[in-house]
Image (tube, rainbow, N blue to C red; front, side, top):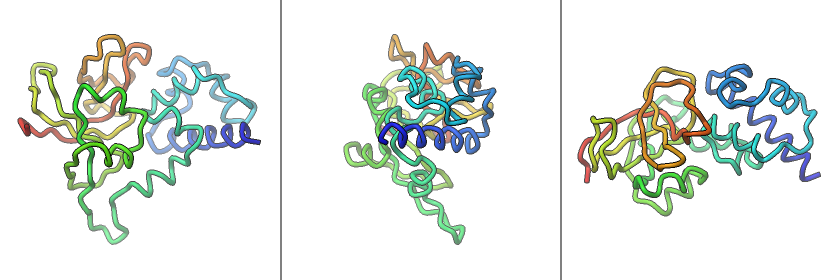
Length: 199
């Protein structure tokens, strides 16, 4: 029964993430390196126990937690974490500030958990699932140590700048590549604001 619940959560989360991130089944296949058959079988409910490597590629593609994609209703979670009121007023979102050296180990953690163990800054705008990355090294020749990048976690189909992290070297990079190589990079998310020299 537990496996069935996890499979159902995985299927529903993939469907939600494809729709909410403006992706398609094809773009997910092309960017994650998974076959169309694999994705379709999961979404059709024909897979009882998806391989861990498959789940990792899907969660990396969407920039969501590997653990959560099988166990949490991501749509419900994002609604709760959203700071937009129904009346149209935007309350400031509390955003955990994560130093560059702790970034990779923080990617699988929930925003609520990160907010309890890291200092906070605030973002005034319509957004959810935000983290702030405090740079400790120069980045792309534009940003310096002490700059803060407000990042919407996840991988989105857009031409906006996104922050990625090299899996081998741990170095951060800003790219506009809509489909970075997921074997080489962790996708941190889309950069929505830069704050210079906050330290």
